[in-house]
Image (cartoon, rainbow, N blue to C red; front, side, top):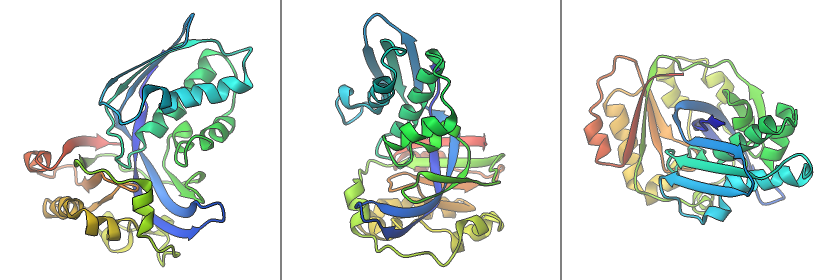
Length: 275
């Protein structure tokens, strides 16, 4: 069985407070981008096998989140879940703030659930996903949500970006989670993201911010430059996704964008009529 784990973007990201467990409470809006995806095939097998192709990752194959997801759920259902062959073809850049690894893990959980007829609910699958990564649970239902706490508590929202153009640029810049959080001063935002998205998109720029951008842009000015380029080409809204290093822009469907200029800055994806 083959499925296609997709990426996400963050619309706004506020670092609200540091938690006693060392993590941070945040608020953000996760929005799925289903046109940019990996390819994941899982089939029953006599022996456990894992194969990865496409973009080369910076971790050992045995540390891949697909394997972690499989082992996590198999531990609770050893008599029901047998060996599988997992083949993953990577298209979503890693270290990009797009959630590619989390999506792969979440889709693995969902696919194992289907293959072995476990009949687990979405809520049960989300519980497993939360043990893998903060944004992993989002990809179980894979629909726009307002996310709080560690980014794993969700509230459904009514938001559609259908028929806009999405431009994604991933430069050759790596930002660790530790680096991203090191420059952040947690505080509650004066503007509520759920209210901001009800405004015309052209006004989002004034009210919707990613708290990571201030210090990360100082250390990596190329990211700030790409965002500025997005607006110079008419983006209604542009921002860094997650803790970076992807910059995305949302454009009207008839926008004229010189993608070659962006291709000189990094891996570029342009998605027409994204949903």
